[in-house]
Every structure is written in structure tokens, then in C-alpha cells.
Image 1 (cartoon, rainbow over the protein chains, first blue to last red):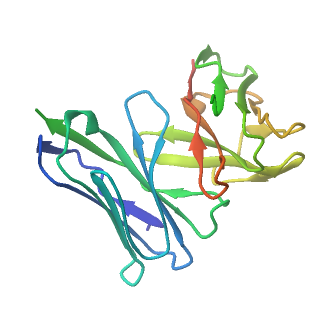
Image 2 (tube, rainbow over the protein chains, first blue to last red):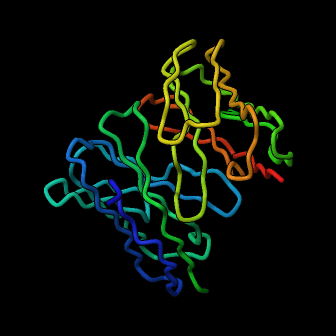
Length: 111
Length: 112
């Protein structure tokens, strides 16, 4: 079993919809949680970063961490075609340590 | 604000040849990382470095060598390339905030 599980999709939703992306993990030592966005043939781009449990909002994006359930989510409101990308969750026990990544969810927003 | 640069961006080589991928960061931050990305496997850590002259193995280090004589550079060498090393390679650094990782644009390597 992988340390971090992420549904690979693909996921297609109409423009304007709310998107929910999720990851589960097994290592209770993880405290730093990130979401990266990766466009085709580009490097991963840090989208959201959360320490420990709770919610964090940045514009149309909200990251949630539930450490008791070992479950993290990324919500995208009012989704736009420009949000079409692969979304990778990542986590670590220490911010400087190697990250453990999910395999990524491919998202397509249909105009 | 260049951040992390990688070169070359594309490379085609033959089995058995030595190949070096370059990574340079402009922040002079301590940690640097090399990942490979393959379909079905996501990003896997090859090697990382906590500081100049300090390196450690990641999840998939076999067939790779790293060095870090200067804080800002972290080259990755494939000593004798194999077809299974065909992949996209990403370098990362822990960036200005120090507590997460920022990635370079990647090197797409094909071994024939």
C-alpha cells in the first residue's frame, strides 16, 4: 500500500463547477501538506501549503486537512478552463524533508 | 526572480553513455532535490542534499550519482544510461520560505 493515495482521475467538470480533489495518507507523522498544480510539459507549481490540521483559503482555492482521518482536500470554486491541469498532493513530516507525493489527479474543465 | 533553472531541457542519448543534468538555484537555500516523474508512479525522489557536500539517497537512487560542491548547484549524473532511465527529471529547492519545495521546469531525457 502506498503512503499517499490519490485518485488519478481523469476528472472532467463543466466550467463554473466546484471541484473537489482528495488524498489519503497512512503516515501519522506528516504535518506539512501541499497541493501542486502541473500543466502539461511543465514543472509542478506550488498552489497551497498547510501546516497541521485546518483550512486555508486563497482566492478560489481552499485546502483542508483532517489529520484525525488522514485525509486532505483541495476545493476549487468557480472552476475555469485555465484550471485544467494535473493536481498533485504532497506531504512531509518536516518542511525541509523529502516530500511524499500522490500520483496526481488529471482535471479538465469543460467550457 | 529565476528561482530554479535546469539544463538541458531536452536530451536524447544512447544506452551506456554518461549523462549529466544540471540544476541551479538563485536563492542559495540549503536543501535541493532530484525527482523523476513517470506515468503511474508520480514523482519519486532520487537524491537530495541538505547543504554543500552533504547528499543522501532517496527512493530510487540506483544508477545515479550526485555532487554538491556549491550551494547553488546540484548536478545529477547517469553514469551508464539505461532505457529504464527514460523519464522527466525535476530539480527542486526549498525556496525562500524554507519550509516547502519549489520545482524547476524539468529535463525530458530519452535513452535509446
